[in-house]
Structures are given as structure tokens and as C-alpha cells.
Amino acid sequence: MNAITTWEDVPLFDREEAEAAFWAENRIDLRLMDSSVAASSEAMDSVTITLRIDPRMLSRIKRLARSRYLNYQSMIKQWLSERMEAELRDTRQATAFQRSPGGQHHGF
Image (cartoon, rainbow, N blue to C red):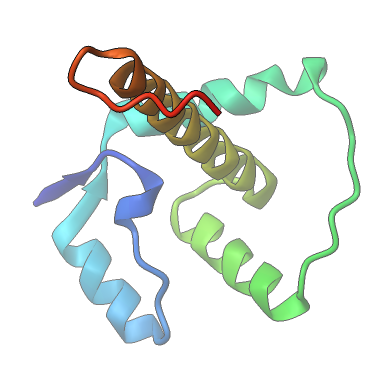
């Protein structure tokens, strides 16, 4: 059985049969579950926002969250957090490359 270590490893499913087949072969890594629970415990230090989402997309998000035994809002926050970290990591790597002797610095 494969361990899922990031939410990006879980595809969007167009049929329940495909989703069932995926989860028959895969499981969520406990560290990912722990990070999701930790993220939801930070709710006391959060700010409420309004976000408009297409109803069909929200239904799919809720279905995905249910399949992972998560609150859909917690799952969305986890996705945002993971993407933000990836973007920051990519930015730091690009900056380090530009500053390295072999990197190209354009001086913009």
C-alpha cells in the first residue's frame, strides 16, 4: 500500500469507482494527517474571510475532504499552506541560483 505524503498526490476523481480504487491502493501518511489536525487547531489565531467558489467545485472539495475524514475548510487551508510553502521554496531557490557564481543575475 502506498503512503500519500502530500495532498497534491491525491488526484481529483470523476467517478466514485475511480476514487474507491485509488484508496484501495493508497493511504494517507500519518504525518500528513497530523499536520492537518495541527492546522485546524490554529483556528483560534485565524481571520475570517469570504471566498466565492463555484458550487460544483465546492461540492467536489467537500467530497474529497469527507473521503479523508477532514473538515473541508481545514483541507483548503492545508492546500493553501502547502502551495504557499512550495512558492516560497521556489522563490528562495531562484534567488539563490541568481546569486550563485554560476547563476545569471540580470539586475532588474
